[in-house]
Length: 229
Image (cartoon, rainbow, N blue to C red; front, side):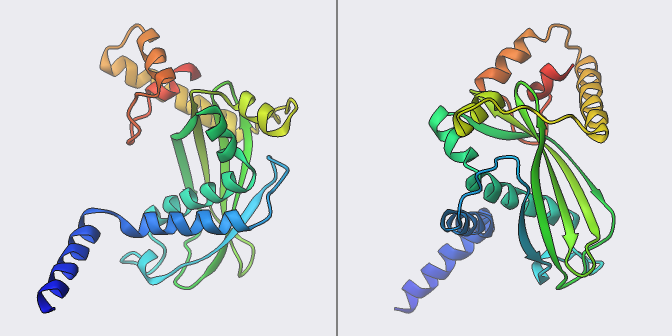
């Protein structure tokens, strides 16, 4: 009996030390919660999920760790896409999405046990990507503590096809805000600089890789950004 208990504890220790178990468990919880909530029929409507800074979110300075903001944004996007039907439509089209770029601006730290709302909305899109804005809004005074822009690249389909199938009509893209235009220009300039640094002259091969979805999705998304130039 004791031997079985020790083996079980050892297996759990190995699992938790080699896999981010809490990330996957949290993803399941978010999916279940979104499943039982009513759908959001307006695909462009902003959605908000509440959050609170817990002990495991803290860094050495006693406020929310910078990396935790991005993790919370991941789960908020899962929730957002499930409720407005985009995940379901992606499945119908046998398509998927990956993060091609993200930029976050920290305006004021979130302290221990501070409650906040994480607001998510699609700002605009182009021929292959959705541009998503996410804001951390303090429930204490309504201050926007952090804001993130995310480029969500669509593989094996495109935003127009997704919205057409989901809404049963053509959805007009909103005007690009000025800050989004500057951000896209930055991504394009970065892509061109990195290609030049790597000695890449012909980008046709990169475009082909982009469409097959075979490119890397760990930090370096130059191939996904190829059509931005």
